Length: 360
Image 1 (cartoon, rainbow, N blue to C red):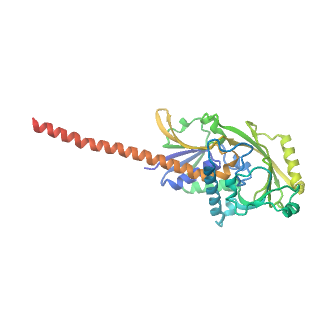
Image 2: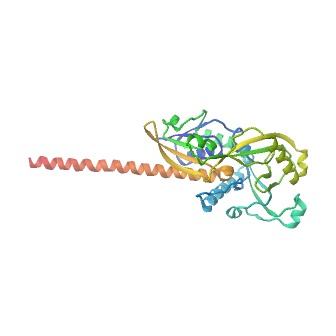
């Protein structure tokens, strides 16, 4: 019997989790429900720069570094595999090198950048304006404007369906066998999770093909080239749900980025984008049994990734799929044990009946 699975959310978490679950659970039927899909998602606002920066907030409240390291490592390995594919351009996967100036770098992260090192003073003098100490390394770029449509195509090719429909409550999906909750910032409402709060990000997208390296200064100023555009940022405004452009933020971003790369003044501004990072003190990945109108339905949660959703997405999709499979095995074992008990009881009852009849 195939499982009928509903996935809520078509952002990078919803799509990567749906894809991994379909790979791991043969013959399951997956339907993805969404309000927005690419190019409207928070991932499309992001630069897709693979780096575990905390977005101005402390990371792991209740999460240790080994777990973060594992998610990061698995995502890095996944992108390395995709890059070797001839269609890597269509997937939006490409390496990018550059400089990070100031700000703390998580120790676990430095181990996964093969060329991570301090910036040489000569390099500072030659390539950096202003000249600042820091580090240089090469990482992956995962351009969600390409990557998310590619994931959608993979899911469709395996028989998955997509329905644009707002889900008000989990009970809307009570007829499904399983529900996967990848609602991002909307988890605040559908789960009533008070640990969730938006981390508003505003960026400027420019056409500047001569910018080939990334530059990050502290936590709020960055120049991040994508395949066909450059993303300038940014803001980290916790608790702010405003999705409209703030002109003052735009002026500040432009001013600070020009200090690092003055030639950006010749860049063609394409648009200003705003997104809400799904901030939470700790990422939530777990299976919860819910009573939906009298029916018990397991809900797999995978949300709360803040500004590191693209960075951790594949590692978290693996953990979410593993958690679901562990749950299903447990349920199957419990069911088999219950059936076995009944089968054992019937012969005992029959034997007792025969014994009584022989004494009559």
